[in-house]
Image (cartoon, rainbow, N blue to C red; front, side, top):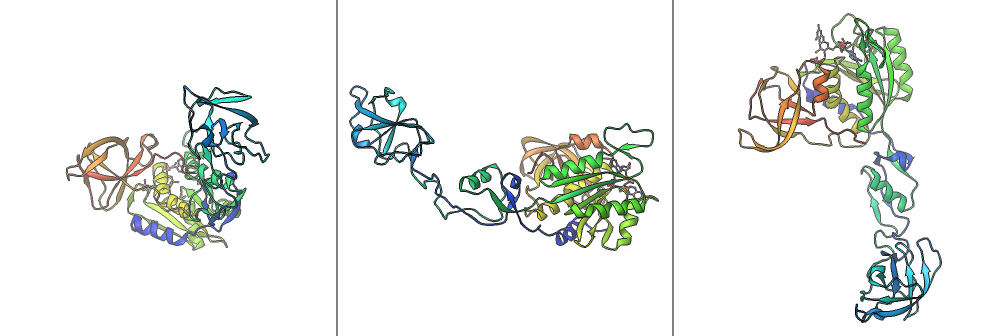
Amino acid sequence: MISVEQHLGRILDTVRRLPPIELGLLDALGCVLAEDVRSAADLPGFTNSAMDGYAVHAADVAAATDDSPVRLPVVNDIAAGNTQALSLAPGQSMRIMTGAPLPHGADAVVPVELTDAGLASVAVRSPVEVGQHVRPTGDDVHTGDLVLRSGGRLGPRQLALLAAVGRSSVRVVPKPRVVVVSTGDELVEVGRPAGFGQVVDSNGLMLTAAVRALGAVPFRVGPVVDDAKELMSTLEDQLVRADAVITSGGVSAGAYDTVKEVLSRVGTVRFDKVSMQPGMPQGFGVLGVDETPVFTLPGNPVSAMVSFEVFVAPALRAMAGRPEHESALVPAVVETGWTAPAGKTQFARAVLHPRRVTGTNGQDCDFAVTLVGSQGSHVLGGLAAANCLAVIPAAVTEVQAGDVVRCHLLGAMMEA
Ligand SMILES: Nc1nc2c(c(=O)[nH]1)N[C@H]1C(S)=C(S)[C@@H](COP(=O)(O)OP(=O)(O)OC[C@H]3O[C@@H](n4cnc5c(N)ncnc54)[C@H](O)[C@@H]3O)O[C@H]1N2
Ligand code: MOO
């Protein structure tokens, strides 16, 4: 038996950040930036109005009041998108819209609400300060400024900044392409009726969805029967499009546990018992000339999902250039106790309830936690109802009400 930390350590020592590529901005959503980005432009690119109103010389309206408005001729009308270079002489005004270029000479904008909205001439009822409602060139970003650093993740806001400073593509760490292969003679395709002795390939769907939710690119390969040749040729075919492979099933001690049988022979994949529950039988190694990482997860659905969370997700994040763990374990106070297996780290399916509560050790927590469903490795109902895995260290066999335990969040729907 090896520990969870040993198995994860071996995986993280093996996987590598993927080499950077250039991608169009939208395709780069969720990717990690692999270059420092400097702006090729000033933002705003020209001095413009922050309000719909009138461009003026502030000095001209310094004496304006409600009772004694200042009247100015309106000599032009400037809409957003106007590309003419205009000049405003003292004693005049121009009607101007939000985002339109401020005419040369003007130093402030009077919002339309502080005027009579006149077209030929305008009555201004309030003074404005020099610079008021004006957005100067380069106010946001100057040409040459470092706007985004290599290593940051690109979300909608960062993509907007890249577009605004003139980029249409960017150098990023690509999202890992992950092939998901289910194995087992008993499996039938999703949507097909499962006859006696048959099981719907829910793992294939679950792991494919988990890969996508994490922000990587999944390819699902329908159930492969327990046949050594078939499995090997499927894996060989799939390696061309894979940065990583995940299999489920066929890794314990059964007579037809083909994944273990086939990959043990290859010599680059190692099978271990990991001291955890669920998820004890695990395999990991590399395949093919590109040394593609392969994770062979146990077939029991809960075991497969817990293994994904604990081993595969950190590895895929590392390959994508992201931190291996993007959220910390959350401390929570146990509502009703339970037993945990001796000598194994337990990943108990549980629900976190947001509530201020103090543990018997005096620790204040933001959550209480209760187990959900029975803890069998086949119990999908409980897995679906859980929003966390309570992580109980191998040395603990009794979890008691009031104990503070640390919980791995399952809640985030999408990491992309
Ligand atoms: N004699 C022993 N038997 C078992 C051991 C052991 O140490 N000695 N370990 C048990 C543990 S723990 C686990 S976990 C499972 C792991 O089994 P396998 O990885 O070999 O998986 P299978 O036998 O193929 O399937 C197990 C179970 O899961 C269902 N399954 C499989 N694939 C899917 C899928 N794609 N979608 C839905 N359900 C799936 C399968 O029908 C079985 O019920 O082994 C224990 N046995
Ligand atoms: O380790 Mo298995 O994953 O308990 O059911």
